[in-house]
Amino acid sequence: MNKGGKVISFLNQKGGVGKTTMAFNTAHALAREGNQVLCLDMDPQANLSLLFNREVKDGYHIHHLLMNSIRELKSIHSPVIYTDILNSMGSIDLLASGSELSGFELTVAGISSPRQLILKKFIDNNALTNIYDYIIIDGPPTLGLLVVNILCASDGLLIPFKADDFSKKGLLSFYEILEQVKDMGISKVPEVIGHIPNLLDRKRKQEERDLKSIKLNQKENVKYFGPFYNKAQLVKSLGQRKSVFDFSLREFDEIQGQFSSIAQGIKEWNREQIQ
Image (cartoon, rainbow, N blue to C red; front, side, top):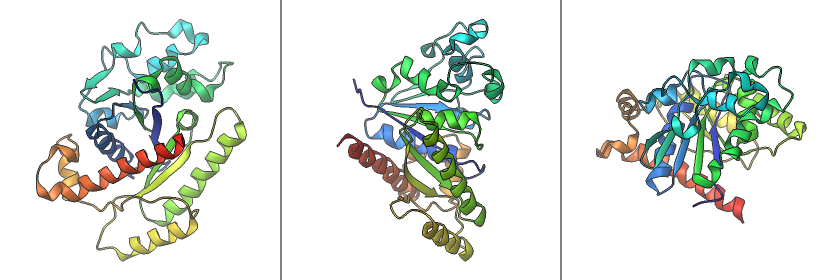
């Protein structure tokens, strides 16, 4: 049993950058290399749960588990533990999301315990990092309390983004949030493992220029994966709710290699943490 599992989150406050796609396929890449992976869908839109083609069990999902971890909210606790609603798919498990998660911030507004640490407390109380090699979190496109909880619970971050001027400003805002988490002093600040330029169009030279400009404006030691271009193979796999690794066609070799590269980057980062 592994006792050093890492929590890796895919985050960007901007929607439509491919966070869910990246989380889904990276989870499969890690699982293919013999890792036991848990996916947490922390987006009320539940797109990761939809990609896995898994619905909530008996109406319960991650929101109810988070509420159950807060003693002050005992009056709204649900009669379930995480194993009751866990979707198991071989080397990948999933805790699905649901629309109730959109009310997370309002529901916990009055509690006295640290609201920023609810997700971390849930993970710790259930010893999930003793069970899984990697916990992959798909976060919502916001900068609210849900994202702060994800940051406080995470060891590492991957940031998918589109190469445009809006992303340049958005990435700066994201790093400001990391500084705010650091200033809170209630948890360690997760490390940015890398950025993932996504959904590039080979025909648009401006995107290449914007990507170069974004890289110049970032810290020198930030790693970049990809870039990922708009590919018919990725659209095909998403349409069938399959990972790119479910296809044996040669046309999928390149994109499979890209996700394997992200998985390898995560493992290398993990080894550096241990040393």
